Image (tube, rainbow, N blue to C red):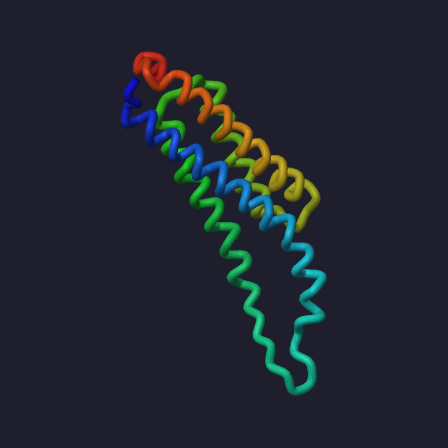
Amino acid sequence: MKKSLTAQVASQADLIGMLAATVCMIHCLVTPLFLVAKPLLLPVEGTHIAHGWGWWEVLDYLFLTVGLIAVVFATHASSPRWLVFGLWISWFCLAVGIHLEEQLVGQFLLYGGSLILIVHHAFHYKYCREHSGNAQTLLK
């Protein structure tokens, strides 16, 4: 059966969303290692090692933006409400976690939101693949 355009877009959005959330989680797990190594990389008498740490934080917002776009396009396929709700809640948890990452609750929201976003995109991807031939199911 030929997939509808909406199902194809949702499928691609889910793949991109899973990839972005996975890379985001790796980014968040590696950050503490860079922070520990930062004093070792600071300029030492006469050496000029330039480190702009601002770009590292920009990656947070890049992943968040890509994730938002993926959720918007994935939920455009009108899947079951629990799945759409799960995608939006997990993205929201990730967004709040990024803003509160200095606090313990922010860490839980960051890692939990990212992991749950990956899981919801995987469920949504599977759902769209199973129901791609039935346009009525996708539009409920």
